[in-house]
Structure formats: structure tokens, C-alpha cells
Length: 170
Ligand code: FE
Image 1 (tube, rainbow, N blue to C red):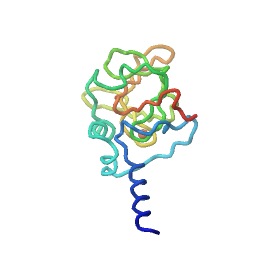
Image 2: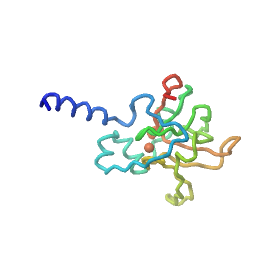
Image 3: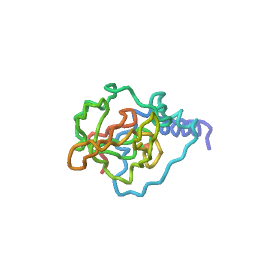
Image 4: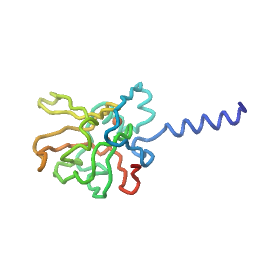
């Protein structure tokens, strides 16, 4: 292969794999009903893909400061996807104002897209939520949400990207 062509190809592959974790290509959501194939990457790869805040929340389980997240006040119609892998997680019509400082939803778009893990940290008993595909930390779910589910999926904005209704692929 021509050396220049090879270098251009390699640069294209590198660019298409490199995101900040907050600017995934639009339409990278996965439709519901798809079989979830887990993604496993070494820590060094996640550090390259995610910006420092996204890395600390998604890969280290940190929590963003309340009332600071970019999606807290977002009232546009569309889907929220995992900021690390693009898996579709929530629909805008299940988002509600919980007053807690983090984007809140009363229902996941597909239960199989989110893994629930008992979390006994900070002296509390909570249910942690992780992306079923990449294992990224999303937030926690509480049983004080509105009808019809009574659940409050309390999610870090930095763990989410937003795909507006008119940019969805399905
Ligand atoms: Fe993910």
C-alpha cells in the first residue's frame, strides 16, 4: 500500500475512535431490543477516550457536583445515551425535575441496558446503575420517583450524551 495512503487511513481510524466522551457522533445510540454485547477496554484506552471528568465519573464512580451538569435543564425531545459507548438509556419524555441537582428519569428505555448493583458506600444502602455495555457508572436509582414507576433514576450528566429527536437513527 502507498505509504501516504496508509498514513491517511491510520489518521482517519484514530480520529473516528477518539471522542471526548461528551461529543459522540450524533445518532450513535443503539436501538432497544438489540442484544447487548459487552465492551471491555483497558483503563488506558478509557483515559484516551474520555475527558478527565467523564473518566472520573464513568470509570471511577465519582459523582458530579449537583446543579452543574449540562443536561439538568435540558427539556428538548430526544434520547439520552451512554457518553462512553453510545448505548441508548433514557427517553426525554421520562425525564422530570426531581430538584436533586442531577438529571432524573422515572424509567429506563430498556431495563436490559442498565445493570443494577447494590452499593453500600458512604454508610448508605443504595442501588448503583451502570451501563450494561461498557460498565460505565451512571448514577443510582431510588424508590421516591413519580408515577407510573415510583422510581427516580438519578444520573450524572457527564455520563450521558443527548441525541435530539430529529437526529435519531431509527
Ligand atoms: Fe456505556
